[in-house]
Image (cartoon, rainbow, N blue to C red; front, top):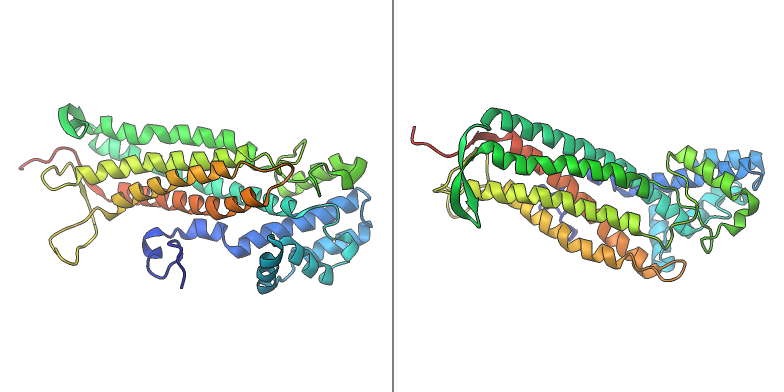
Length: 353
């Protein structure tokens, strides 16, 4: 039994997004951490910091290591991070002198986050593009139909369906442009070592960072971003902007579907246990809920920006609690919005004919 709506036994039927959940799964997160450790052994071996033969052996072993998740959880309770137990396990499998030395826990976890955001961004961009296409198809089918324009939820003057759909559709291209600008700010390798100064790497620091970035497909960095979280927080704000746009669509659809207005017809709909004649706009309502949820989480992520000195256990841990939920919310909202667009059978003012 779990209290999280995304994987709850029945609440997940409304909230879960399997594709985003797979990207955030423990197995996928561990794969990213192992990718860091394998790349680290290889890069340090190539730079002469580790024995090259032992480094290559370690990298090969690490890449296919079977990890004891129960032990990682026990270590998490003790250490506040998963990496000390992970490194301990890896050192029993690979030459210990060629494992992790010179890196720190935050290097591993933040680089894994960067790899996660890279995959999540690809999924989000794909879904934004698909939703734009779906809305363009609605515009082509129903765009010239008349619709009562409403301001402050009161009848104003007649508009067309195109006028309203454009207000749903046009922000999507802006979100895709924002994502293009944001990705380099978060898809960055994290390497700082104990206090973020890369001192343990000596004059090999630049070579190790460049090699790590190349192998993992991330951007190189001039300095560790352990305590500089504006990129991650800006990404969270982006997620809320996306769900905000989708929430506006959901709110409009729910109002248009009201009995007595009937500006939209949808196939399917939610049933009522008390009133069998009703078809509730469940999907549209969900978009509003998801938008409001992400909007509240933005505040928490701004709190998570306040890292003390060179590293914070407080702010960093808050990120772990909030950002995955925002990613799940965004993924689900995009899937729901596209589903709604595909179920529209009529758009425009209802007629008697």
